[in-house]
Amino acid sequence: MRERQTGRERRRAQEFETFVAGAAGRLLHTATLLTTEPMRPPGANPRAQRLLTAALASTYAQWERLRGEDPYDRTRHELAVRFAHQVWRHQRPRGGLLDALTPLERLVLVLRLYEGVAEEQAAALLGLPVERVRAICNRSVATMRGTRRPTTRWGTPGPLGVAR
Image (cartoon, rainbow, N blue to C red):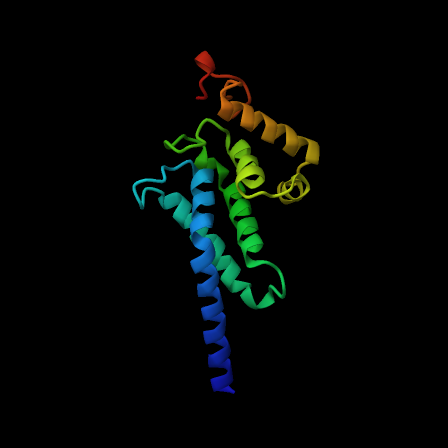
């Protein structure tokens, strides 16, 4: 009995390690975009690393119960939920690519454009109407293209159109 359990645990750990080896890079990039930390030099994104580590730990804890569910989707979901719950930590720009956006705008933009999540799925994940997700995504894209002034986290433009 003990040998069977040890073999199962070893197989579980090996499956998870294989998953992490293939998905961790992209998931870390996603977490880094959300936290607006710089991507270079390596190690310049400790908040993103902590966010990803917590999401991966949750996925590993549920590994046996996934039963056909995509572990990447599960980890991405966990990453988004953890970011949303810790959003107050990610308010200040840190020099990252998306620091002109509010945390909600970053989350929607990353889910929709970088991760390719459908509007309906993103809306369900965030608990928002589909139309709201569409509007946030469009506003985020306009901000990144420079056709719209960034907003403060309260939704009004800061002085000279720069987010505070």
